[in-house]
Amino acid sequence: SGVTYLSSFSLGGHITVRSGSPTGAVVSSGSSPLLWTATISGSYYIHHNTNSSCLPSSIAGVASVSVNPPPAQPGSITGNANICSGSFQSYSISPVAGATGYTWTYNGSPLAGTGTSVNFTTTSSGTLSVVASNSCGNSTPSTLIIAVNQALAQPGTITGDTSVCSGIAQTYSISAVSGATNYTWNFTGSGTISGTGTSISFSPVSSGTLSL
Image 1 (cartoon, rainbow, N blue to C red):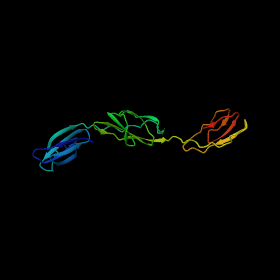
Image 2 (tube, helix red, strand yellow):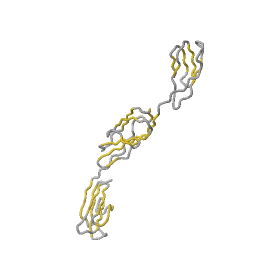
Image 3 (cartoon, one colour):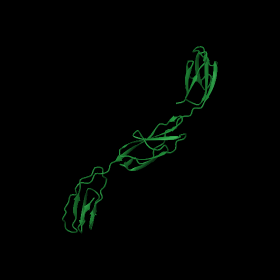
């Protein structure tokens, strides 16, 4: 990044550009016309001679340059990193000094919005990225890896007796459901359910439907 200039002399010759002072570090050197780039703010001294043996005293001009850098990398993205498939989510960053716009992408695809926050839904895991920008360029992206949890499959058949004596504890169970962290059992009649896993102890006192 920086500001690029073209220095030339009608008589041709050799040009040397130095930074900071007439004897400063050589930024660029070559035959006229010469393209050179100022990467930091300051004074640049342009020396001209008929050949490459330009002396520091052969100053043909001085350029005062103000180089504005692109924005700094945005801070951490705030928002949920573990989400349910298809759920509506909001993510944000703090404003970046000097930035005039922001570009949000998910897995490389652009998202709507150019501010410090974005809303979207997704059904697949991936990487959320945001880049701050201004007229001088783009920042390094800030990223957040998002894990999407898919909807759970319906539990299988409940195993257990369907004809029981009132008040007598019974055991009912199902096979584990992939991705499930707990199970909620319900009964339409009266009775006591003990447990939240794949197997429960159940003491019914009236007929009804057991479900989860």
